Length: 387
Image (cartoon, rainbow, N blue to C red; front, side, top):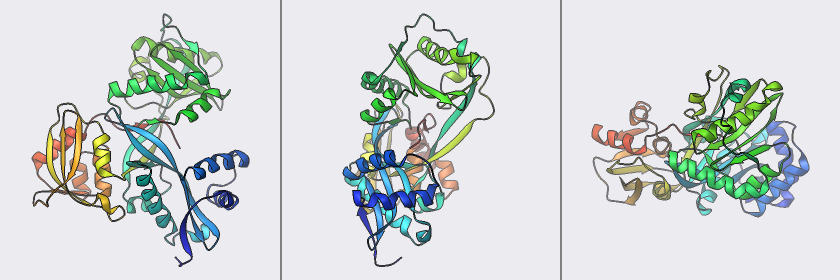
């Protein structure tokens, strides 16, 4: 790395260079004008950072302003996307320089978490990220879905004007189910999807579905249902295309009710994509998360975080009545000790036994481990979206 390398906010004048680095990083694809329009929106909102060598842009990354469900509560999260580094600058610390700036910007934007789909784990683990959950694509028979019934449930075609209703229905379901992992997209993005003629959207009183064609198959991007009857009706709506599409691909969680409703299990060609998590503002992330009902926890915690020093130090982690807090405290000999990776994995519900086995958690006691598992445990974290 040279002294000429520095982090900058990507501006309009950097976009041509960014497009060229993108081509070298990901290969050809996509519409350049559409990419430029979207990139400019990120840049104007201070959510696109880059590294320049002198005046030449050699790396860049974007931050999505998401919220993410954790324990049935919404936590502000930076979705890191379009991380690009010019080939001749790889392996020279440029990626680390860029990502440390991204972490700091996430904190400045009030985004207590950061998540990404890694092209490589080495860089991101070095910066405190750890695997937190999966994105699943299951494959079902369209004929099976068509037979699910639900004919007594009124279902209508949806459009852009239903974007806020979709948010409200999804929020109600995820809060009730105490979901961990699914995203809340900006309203503008949902309106765009619902206005896209390639997407088919239908809504019922307590649920909705969005799906589209994909290489001769149907693909469900999201299906939310507040009742069995609505789930049957919406899945049957998708399955009504069985005379043309024999297969339905579906992005749903591993415990979604559809796995229990269909006569046959999902086909073997399930695709799984893993994603990583990091806490950028540990006290805020703990305060916003939902915890297991009935779990009670009061434990000394020592955190190491070289890249975000505000997270480091001695804390008191408390959980009661489904909420948590992380408050600065005096050092304690019996403290549980975690680095940024271990804290991210614990936050995502990874059992303490696994963390100890990987050397990511030390200190504490068997009783404390049981209390941590009870507080952070629950359904497996999953996402249905890529970004």
